[in-house]
Structure formats: structure tokens, C-alpha cells
Image (cartoon, rainbow, N blue to C red; front, side, top):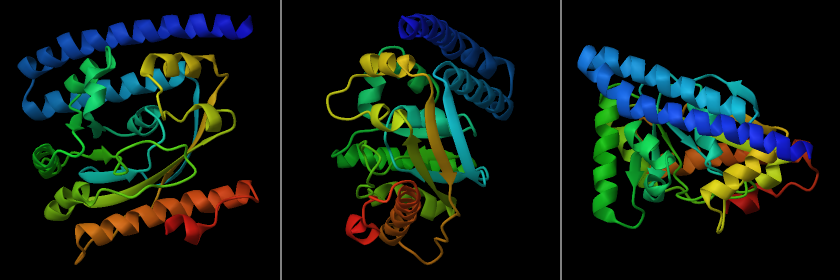
Length: 266
């Protein structure tokens, strides 16, 4: 009974949040573009996007243990990918544009909000579309904007880090932008329930998250990568290795049955 009451209450808050999001995206964002210069309008949009994600975080009871230094503006943040919650976990700490799979653009409400928020959608396997995505990333980095990307291209259960798509690193190399690895690890009850994998759909997964008492997650901003003199493939491998090293190390500390680092990287 208690879990049902929690679900209905949080669902009500989520509906209010989505309505506010629609008002912000469809009404306030265009008004800001008319009333302010490009730079000032962007600053105000970024503040609203960050605040909206913080509200979302509070409703689903995200409890984030954060370590490491936040990146400077104009950085490419690269993270392992476990759930749609990853966007809320990372995005509430800094104004940034996300690179997300094109499927999200068709999600109810969230798809519209993501489009209006400037999310860059990528169609995996389509070389022409990947090229367009890289050009958009290049332009944003030149404007000193930060970008958050998930180079695995799909989600995992959090106990591995898949191969990284190296093409997403090229815009950062061309602009000499900071590349910062980010490691995400859901913990406690959320370790089992937070992964958004297989045939999960957004609405049913959201409802499951709303029934949880809390969602614990460890968010680690790792030291930046020195990309000088390196190509996208070597930077991709180094970034993935650092993220996995952090995750494997924490798993080893929390659980004596953690996977072997070398075999998992191979």
C-alpha cells in the first residue's frame, strides 16, 4: 500500500514536471530568443534545463555520490551508459548538450523536450547521419558548449563497458577540446532495476523507478584525457579503459566476486 501511494504521488509530480517542461520548451525558450541576445538567451535556457533536471532528480529520489572535478565549459564528457536516468544524473550538474540515439526523439513528451533542449540525435549505422552529428558537435564545441556522449551506442547492466564508437571523439580532437571520462554506477536496489536494457519501454521503466524508495548512484568525473598527438581511436581506447578501471576497482572493493579487469577489457 505504501509503495502504491508513493507511486501515485510521484507520478502526479512527474506529470506536473512534464507540463512545466512543455511550457518552458514551447513558450519560454522562444520568448528568450526574442528578448535577449544569443549569448544571454543561451545562458538562461541552460539554467532552466539544469533546474528542470534537478527537479526530476528530486522526484525520483536520486541519491548521487559524486567525486572528481566538474569539467570546464567546452568539454566533451564521455560516459558509460546504463539507463535514461544517466541523462538526469549527469545533466543536472552542468549545462550541456546530449548526444542520444534517434529513438528517443519519438518518445512521448520526452522526445519533444529533448529536441527543444538541443539534444543531438544520432542514427547508428547511418554514415551520412553520423557525419551530420559530428558537424553539429564540432559547431557546439567551437561555441564553447559542453557535450555529453555515450559512445557505447547502447545500454548495459553496468557490469561492463562495451566498445566505444571512435567517431564521436573526432570533433573534440579537431577543436582541441577537453575530453573527460565519466563513470556511472547504480548501487543498492537500483543496481538491479535502473538498467534500461532489452525490451524495456520508457513509460513502464519510469513507473518502476517511481516505486523505488531511492535510486543510489555513484558519479565519478575522472581526470581529463591528454589528447595531444593522438588520434580518435587511441583516445577512444584510453577513455574506455579509464572508465572501466574505475568501475572494476569499485566493484572489487564492494564485491569480492568482481569481474577480472584484464579479461573484461579484452
